[in-house]
Amino acid sequence: MRLLLVEDDDRVAAALVAVLGRHGFQVRHARSGHEALDALVPDGNEPYRVVLLDLGLPDRDGFEVCSRIRAHSSVPVIMVTARADIRSRIHGLNLGADDYVTKPYDMGELLARIHAVARRGQAAEPSEPVSQPGPLEARGVLIDRERRRVSVHGRDVPLTRKEFDLLALLAQSPGVVYRREQIFSEVWRSGWEGNGRTLEVHIGSLRTKLALPGLVEAVRGVGYRLMPEQPASDGPSAPAQES
Image 1: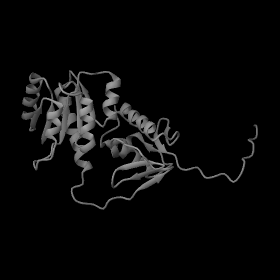
Image 2: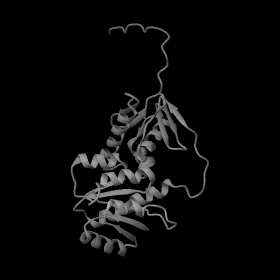
Image 3: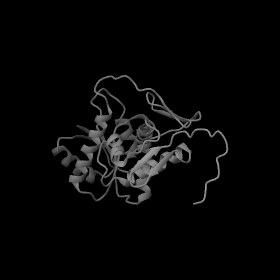
Image 4: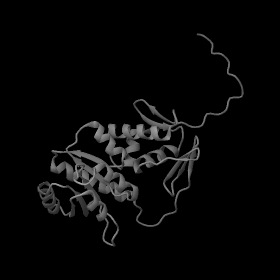
């Protein structure tokens, strides 16, 4: 499995390359954001299965690098950084990172996370051409699943890969409650345990970008649903009777 390591500290990178090599990875080491983006340009070789991305790079911030990667590629990205604050973690996930690991980390856990995101990325790519699904529409939201584009009343809304997959899942059956476990199985290809904050972050970002209050509703203790269009009322409703 080919892996791109983006790390400006040669000592840290050398240790990682050695360990990853012993576990069967073919690692390319990029020392800057520019070098990382250049390495991801298709060149006819086997594509990278995972990118390990440090945030403190000498030429540009790792968040910018992640954003530029996600604009052109669906390769899984794991941010590996000393920035442990929740705002950085949320920002990284909103930009499209698939995972976020803080230093110092356990090497066994990092390896497990690499294999996990690689499996998800592979599962998301069909092994042979398949017919593209048709568009979905609900409450003024048009979801073009073939082009992976979303618009709200004609306004294009840029979404990350996970945000798009999450919205498309909920829009398949408006009004139906999707359990958290089901959402993680379908969108993240992993289990729900310990990942609650990740789902909350993506739901919050989706609500903000769509700017449609009440579209995505939380069902406490269960999961989420996309609220269907309410039928038009034939007239004023009768006042409720006091009990």
